[in-house]
Length: 215
Image (cartoon, rainbow, N blue to C red):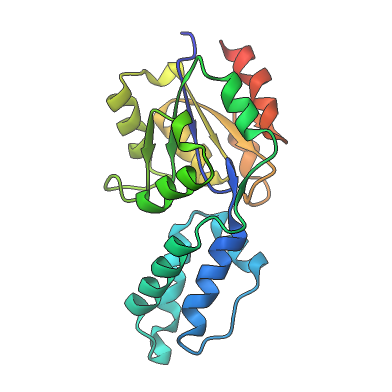
């Protein structure tokens, strides 16, 4: 069936956001006397989904640090500094303009409030029919539920849909949902994550050729 809908991950796919996330992470832990973590380590956590960022805070519980307090400081700081250094990857806006004939949605493991604010701050929100964050439903990627929920809300079939993401979570969720998948190799994904994808792209504008091939 012809392609109707393109789904996108956010961090590492549409937007390079690692520096702002790292800054918020280190702000939160430094307030509790913990040594800052290098950006490269935080970027590796993003490669497995932002869920690991929040889980990381639990590791310091044995040091007497309250994980809930660390999360609170992270969220407050990140909301106030969500797009200081973050920016769309090269060609994102131009490519989304060229894809205006297709419905589009964001499916992220990031909290919905963070996802929407990032898109709004970077003037990308208007390109999307729907935005789903990690707390928009009961399960996050690699569960297919978030994708299936978006398909149901937009009235689109799985075989009319393409999922674009930069981690194994995105590819596994897409495959489990029965949609074709595109691996964005320029993002935060770990080595080999793209092996199970239907397509790969080394730069965002390559999506145009992929979309043309599946129409």
